[in-house]
Length: 363
Image (cartoon, rainbow, N blue to C red):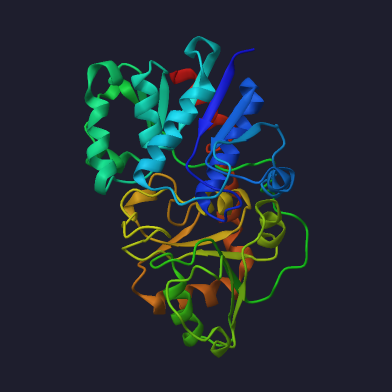
């Protein structure tokens, strides 16, 4: 059986959405093709089994730690990482499919005639932006194909149509199922990153407008967009990062899930504004949970979220409309049942398995 490789510049353990994406892609790539090897800079071998469990890995794959220690990935370190990956992959004839989230690795592998899919989730900045120009060279370009997370990313790249495919993020529908459990009354929840622009700002404002409505926030409390006294908000509770496999259990405890993005959205390790081309993981997880979703009205996911069909969309700046709508929902939950059914139906068009199949067919 030929080998399949996935290359990602991440050290484990890690709490980022990037890691969820990588593990679910490897999970379902393993289901469809088998013999999958994930190449990353570093992971302690003793933690591999525990980490796989935390990400609900059902279809096993091998995780290969390229380096012997956890070191910061400088530009030159990334080049060395790419070279090491090339050595591990070996003869291109023995490989069926190679996917990379690393731009530098993908270009170097393509230079050595290893056909590679490069998955791109953000615009490029700094030295990487200039390094990417090497992909235009004929002997490199012939070995590269691209996966863009959102069609609006094409505004930052000049790639021939036959060379790329656009694929949103996805959801593991085998895992994200609404479970029967006790549901909190008059309580909304938010799951995800707590970096600037992701919605925490709006939720805190909403909590001031109606003290009778509670808000539960789940995310990595070590990575928050600003310092404030969490205990000063009596109707807001903060919960730390959850292992991926536990998230559906906790999402099931709420009728209403919030996605209150601002018009400018930051990621944890960069000053990039991703609001114009993001594809939020939690969007698809919310849909699969068959819940009432209230989200900011943004063009970036308008092809998925349809107001009053599978969700409710509002202007992020008008918090009074948000709190009015939330109060209205809790006074008559049954009136909004159609949103839950439609959300679940929508989620079935965005599964990891379908995503992997589209890449295989495009290969």
